[in-house]
Image 1 (cartoon, rainbow, N blue to C red):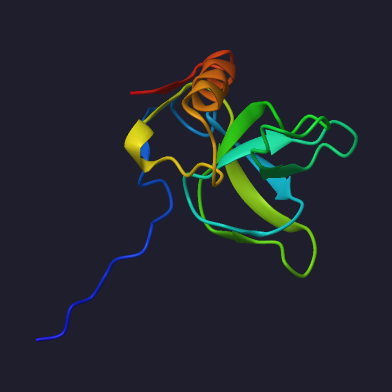
Image 2: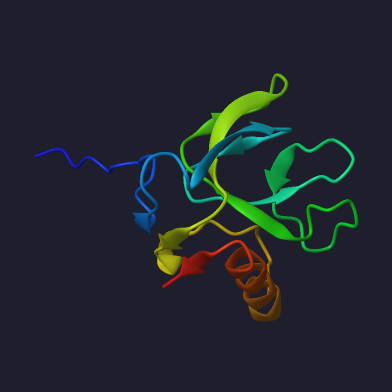
Amino acid sequence: MSVKTETRRAGDFVLSEANGTLSRENIVIDTGVHVPGTVLGKVTATGKYVALAPAATDGSEDAAAVLYGHADATAGDAKAVGMVRLTELIVDLLVWPAGITTEQKTAALLALAGSHIVAR
Protein backbone atom coordinates (compact mmCIF):
# COMPACT_ATOMS: atom_id res chain seq x y z
CA MET A 1 0.00 0.00 0.00
CA SER A 2 1.36 3.42 -0.93
CA VAL A 3 1.51 6.21 1.61
CA LYS A 4 0.56 9.73 0.64
CA THR A 5 1.66 12.73 2.64
CA GLU A 6 -0.69 15.67 2.49
CA THR A 7 0.96 19.01 1.88
CA ARG A 8 -0.05 22.19 3.63
CA ARG A 9 -3.39 23.55 2.52
CA ALA A 10 -4.44 27.16 2.28
CA GLY A 11 -5.76 28.34 5.62
CA ASP A 12 -5.20 25.07 7.48
CA PHE A 13 -3.65 27.08 10.33
CA VAL A 14 -6.72 29.34 10.79
CA LEU A 15 -8.81 28.66 13.89
CA SER A 16 -11.26 31.49 13.23
CA GLU A 17 -11.48 34.78 11.36
CA ALA A 18 -13.80 37.74 10.94
CA ASN A 19 -16.81 37.58 8.62
CA GLY A 20 -16.35 38.27 4.93
CA THR A 21 -12.88 39.35 3.96
CA LEU A 22 -12.17 41.55 6.97
CA SER A 23 -9.26 39.37 8.15
CA ARG A 24 -7.59 39.03 4.74
CA GLU A 25 -5.86 41.40 2.34
CA ASN A 26 -4.32 40.99 -1.08
CA ILE A 27 -0.57 41.36 -0.61
CA VAL A 28 2.58 41.15 -2.72
CA ILE A 29 5.33 38.67 -1.82
CA ASP A 30 8.77 40.00 -2.74
CA THR A 31 10.92 36.88 -2.90
CA GLY A 32 11.05 33.15 -2.24
CA VAL A 33 8.69 30.18 -2.14
CA HIS A 34 6.37 30.09 0.86
CA VAL A 35 3.74 27.73 2.24
CA PRO A 36 0.51 28.55 4.06
CA GLY A 37 1.14 29.67 7.63
CA THR A 38 4.45 31.43 6.91
CA VAL A 39 4.91 34.37 9.26
CA LEU A 40 5.65 37.46 7.17
CA GLY A 41 7.32 40.80 7.71
CA LYS A 42 6.60 43.90 5.62
CA VAL A 43 9.49 45.77 4.01
CA THR A 44 8.95 49.43 4.89
CA ALA A 45 10.43 50.90 1.70
CA THR A 46 8.37 48.79 -0.74
CA GLY A 47 5.28 47.68 1.20
CA LYS A 48 5.97 44.13 0.00
CA TYR A 49 5.99 41.10 2.27
CA VAL A 50 8.82 38.62 2.85
CA ALA A 51 9.40 35.80 5.29
CA LEU A 52 9.96 37.16 8.79
CA ALA A 53 13.64 38.09 9.19
CA PRO A 54 14.33 38.86 12.87
CA ALA A 55 17.87 40.12 12.19
CA ALA A 56 16.81 42.54 9.42
CA THR A 57 16.44 46.31 9.77
CA ASP A 58 14.14 47.00 6.80
CA GLY A 59 10.79 46.37 8.50
CA SER A 60 10.76 42.62 7.82
CA GLU A 61 12.00 42.02 11.36
CA ASP A 62 8.50 42.75 12.66
CA ALA A 63 5.75 40.20 12.05
CA ALA A 64 2.98 41.87 10.04
CA ALA A 65 0.91 39.04 8.51
CA VAL A 66 0.59 35.30 8.00
CA LEU A 67 0.44 33.87 4.48
CA TYR A 68 -2.93 32.26 3.72
CA GLY A 69 -1.98 30.10 0.72
CA HIS A 70 1.07 29.06 -1.28
CA ALA A 71 3.21 31.76 -2.91
CA ASP A 72 6.09 31.45 -5.37
CA ALA A 73 8.00 34.68 -5.91
CA THR A 74 11.17 33.13 -7.33
CA ALA A 75 10.62 34.70 -10.76
CA GLY A 76 9.45 38.05 -9.41
CA ASP A 77 6.73 39.50 -7.23
CA ALA A 78 3.83 37.17 -6.45
CA LYS A 79 0.28 38.14 -5.58
CA ALA A 80 -0.96 36.40 -2.44
CA VAL A 81 -3.43 36.65 0.41
CA GLY A 82 -2.31 37.52 3.92
CA MET A 83 -4.09 37.23 7.23
CA VAL A 84 -3.56 40.77 8.51
CA ARG A 85 -6.12 41.29 11.30
CA LEU A 86 -8.85 39.78 13.48
CA THR A 87 -7.73 36.16 13.23
CA GLU A 88 -7.11 33.25 15.59
CA LEU A 89 -4.31 30.93 14.46
CA ILE A 90 -3.07 27.50 15.48
CA VAL A 91 0.41 28.32 16.75
CA ASP A 92 1.81 24.83 16.03
CA LEU A 93 0.98 25.23 12.32
CA LEU A 94 2.82 28.51 11.81
CA VAL A 95 5.99 28.44 9.70
CA TRP A 96 8.97 30.24 11.18
CA PRO A 97 12.39 31.09 9.70
CA ALA A 98 15.19 28.63 10.40
CA GLY A 99 17.14 29.44 13.54
CA ILE A 100 14.50 31.68 15.13
CA THR A 101 14.81 31.86 18.91
CA THR A 102 12.05 31.55 21.48
CA GLU A 103 12.43 35.25 22.30
CA GLN A 104 12.09 36.20 18.62
CA LYS A 105 8.97 34.03 18.27
CA THR A 106 7.47 35.69 21.33
CA ALA A 107 8.22 39.15 19.90
CA ALA A 108 6.66 38.16 16.56
CA LEU A 109 3.53 36.81 18.23
CA LEU A 110 3.22 40.04 20.24
CA ALA A 111 3.56 42.08 17.04
CA LEU A 112 0.81 40.01 15.40
CA ALA A 113 -1.36 40.44 18.50
CA GLY A 114 -1.12 44.19 17.92
CA SER A 115 -3.21 43.60 14.77
CA HIS A 116 -5.53 41.26 16.65
CA ILE A 117 -3.91 38.16 15.14
CA VAL A 118 -3.86 35.75 18.06
CA ALA A 119 -2.01 32.43 18.09
CA ARG A 120 -3.53 29.78 20.33
